Length: 421
Image (cartoon, rainbow, N blue to C red; front, side, top):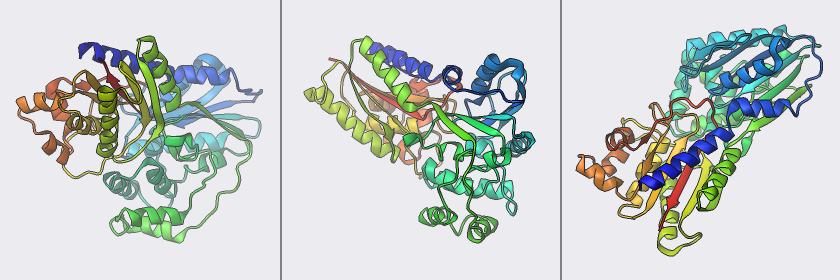
């Protein structure tokens, strides 16, 4: 099992290296013609925005006139020409509002002959909150909390937040007009929809106020969100005009990380199968499907024979039923552990590429055929832990958490299923 764990770690590290934000930006700059702007402004937000900004400073130096980025607490770094500002995630905070105002101000300062480079990565929507007139940050935070607790996927979360924002859904690019805008985007959403990533601050909004209302009703929280939120969503039907002189470029994605992971696994002697980079659904249900595939590989050699590495990526959700501590990757692994109980020579690793899984210090966890037995010996009941959404204490006690610290990138989650002879 130790050999499988070491292999999983090497594969994971290779995947993360492939989506290093700085290298992604450097690669993009080699392919994009920036022209000869009078001034360059840099704005943006996301968990990876600091490393992206650092790469920009290295490449453009004094050509950058000013800049401001919002990033998550603990993800900041010292920059020379761009202000790196720490804000709250996943729930927006007052620091985020202050930073968003400064970002909006810099966008407004740009003129026709200037260039605004916008850096967007995972977490940007929560990290760059600027509520529309009529609602407060507390109103928006309450709506966000209810959406998260309901298990809403990122597409639904961002649809609602866009319509409560003065900066999302293309509104940042509108503030910068008539300046040229180039957005460098590190994708953290299934399908790489640029209108969803960071709630699309430089992308015309394809969603509507009616859709935002429907999401809240479908999630049974319409009557629970603040009255001001209902008022804004019910009374406004504005359409964002077509944005001119805006270029949106995806510089890194989950698929890029998975391709690198697959190549690494092959170099280690594994047969590989990449299931999908678009996995969605309830974490524990998706885990059961993955566990069934792993059992089939181990027992029959289908769809590939051991030594095998099956890879997938995407972003599952967790509907909160208990009051425990954990994250979607830890819940995934705990559900998988129950499904592969007693199976020999297998390993599951699921982790968030940003180094954070839920409100914990872990990126994810390892699980194998002995997890349930070892947990029982330590006084844990796996079923009870799942019922309470309380995977973290169990995996911490077993020494099976994956703790990387902030990775500086964010391209959703990666799951590795390893099987040996």
